[in-house]
Image 1 (tube, rainbow, N blue to C red):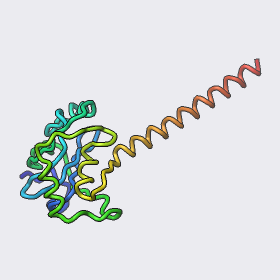
Image 2: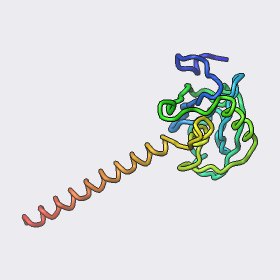
Image 3: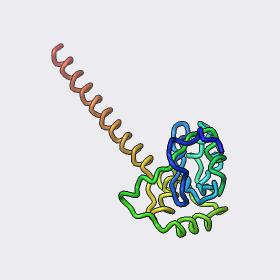
Image 4: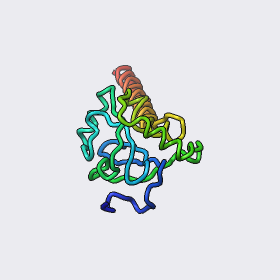
Length: 166
């Protein structure tokens, strides 16, 4: 296995969350050992698909797959990222792997905002489905919306002041 896919860090351990850096978004998988991961794969999520994988947002079904991490990552960088271990206790490793393996081959609902690959792996590791990517996009959209509303309000006030002076 080539090492240029790794950030400097230890080899993943079974039950670890793997964050794969696709162009424009992050794909998530859970490491189950022997080089394999289990992940939620919408039809267009293929190794190294890049921008084409963004189209996966338009589907409502996905297949749970068990594949080699090397193949899933393709040419994209990845890292172990058990980012919620400080907030939530991970389930026992054997339970994480058992739950993941039982789902392989099943077709499941896929929704970008509520049932995506990040929700899937967090549910397996912690028993809690959550996606920070979705939260961050919603927060950014909210901030952008408030900013645009403020700019619009300033524009209205400015145009009223200009009309009053004429």
